[in-house]
Structure formats: structure tokens, C-alpha cells
Image (cartoon, rainbow, N blue to C red; front, side, top):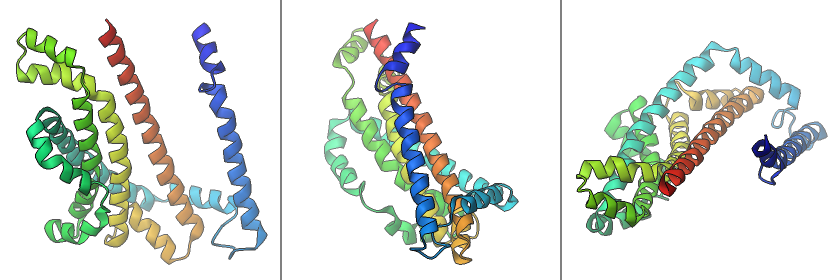
Length: 266
């Protein structure tokens, strides 16, 4: 009970953040409605809130939306698994091997901020115009932040843990699974958070450029018909989904960091 009271009373606790966030959300909605009713912009460019709500419910009731969501979800999950697993593997190698890190990591750092959409024509030639090119776009986008976060996390492992592993004559695989991975779970999850965001952007961008299915395609279809309530409804769902996944990964990273800290202090 005391712990719960302390959590609620802290500036970073529930009551310290919920109030300002609700006020900010209400102010944003009020500003949107005021702009929609002001007549300063063409009326369908900024629809009133009631039109947005109707468009959102219409999207959720449309079977085509769920079919497109399944396509985008499959492409996103495949991109995260391929790009994320490869990023973790290469990051572990770079973190352990100083020679390979010195040889290649600087190139990774230079390539990481490059807009990956410029690679899309190459990915189309390599993977075709189907889902493969969208998956490749998301995987390439996800790979770099996961790699760099993992490599930095491995280099940050407490040297005492490594000396203890060597004193017990732990094999390489034992050191990997008993020392490196437990100590780097939280930083890797933070890297996956970044990777998820850019992978989602990559997949959606690819769908807007060359696709006949997926959420990105559905957004462009609504835009082409100037169906702004539907387009905004789709965007609201994408933002809500991204925020939910980000919150979940952030919670997992904090939990992993707490578990690692407790184990390290025992």
C-alpha cells in the first residue's frame, strides 16, 4: 500500500503524468475542432471531430481494412524478425570482436542515418514488386538501430562478470547465454523499439509507392478519393498501434533492467 501511494505521489508517478497528458490531449482536440470550424482551411482538409469519429468507426467496420492490416502486420513481423535477429547477431559479434568493430562498425554508423527509401528501387529489383520488397525495406530499416544498440550494450557489460565467467572456465556459448544476453536484454529492447518504429515507417512507405494491398495502400486510396475522414481514421489507428507497441517494449525494457540490476546486486 505504501509503495502504491509513493508511486502515485511521485512527480513521475501516475497522478504526476496522467493529469498533464489528459490536459494536453483535450487542448489538442479543442484546437483541432476550432481549426475545423474556423473556415480558415478547406473544410475537408481538417474534418471536425465528429467526422473523424465516423471515419474511424467506418474503417473498423470495413473488412477490407482488416485484410490490409493482416498484410501489413505480416510484412512488419517478418521484417522485425529478419532485421532484428540479424542486427542482434552482428551487434554481438561487433561488441565482442574489437577487430571487426574497428573494421566495419564505422561504416554501419555512417549508413544508419541514410534514408532507406532511396534503396527501394534496388530492393524491388532484388525482391520483386510483391511483399518481399516491403519486408526487405522494413528489415533494412530495423537492422541498423538494433545492431548499434546491441554492440554498445555488449561493450558495456561489467568486466567483473566476464572475469567470473573465465574463472569458472565457461565456454563461449555459456558466456553468451549466461553473461552477455542477460546483461544486454534491456538495451537490446530499446534498440528494438527504435527498430520497430523505422521498420513500420519503411513498410508503410513501401506500400504507398508500389502495392495493391496493405495499410499504406489503403491510406493512398483514401487520399486519392479525397476521403479525409477515412484517411485520418487509418492514420489514427497506425499511430495508436505504434504507441501501444512502443509502450509495451518500453515496459519490457524497464522490467529487464530492474531484473538485471537485482541479479547483479545479489
